[in-house]
Image (cartoon, rainbow, N blue to C red; front, side, top):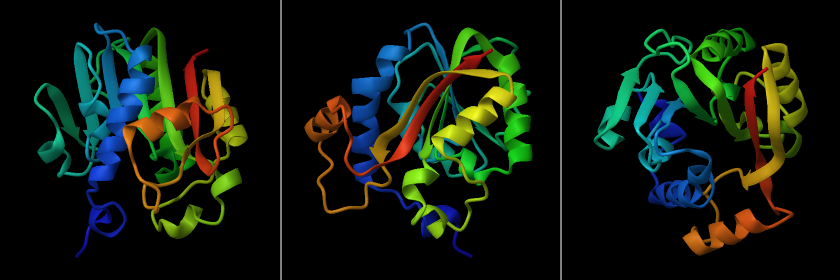
Length: 210
């Protein structure tokens, strides 16, 4: 039987170029070198592999994750709703890309409840995912999507779970690298600098414990 990664998310070198550039040009400046970074639903490890910090942790229930991680990244092959392996107040920067729409609200609430206890004071949860308000036509092309979030509803849900939203960008990135447009670092850097982002359908939300 074909797996989700074979059907919906086969490895694509363009995705690695995108994430390397996003990390170098945007996310790395938010992460001190002494930090502990946790990636939830890490997939191919594109984000966590390209971050430089003291401790890097990747969680995903996909066994293939281990094959794609660089040396120095600790892998946990398990459900993201179980963070019992983490010490209290040990994480500076938690990251989840295209994950929460795959969880029920019950599971997301369970995850967020545990994460509150694992984040250091001042630590943040950083979320990148489709914004239903702008991606409603394609949202359920992925047969594993379970929950619907716009930037408004996700910020509200985070607040209900004891988080304080410190940054919300309703339109941050296009939905996919599968387009005719080239994926070049210089173009990605220019796109990030734009005050208005054409074709953006993914949101970026940053939150801390309230």
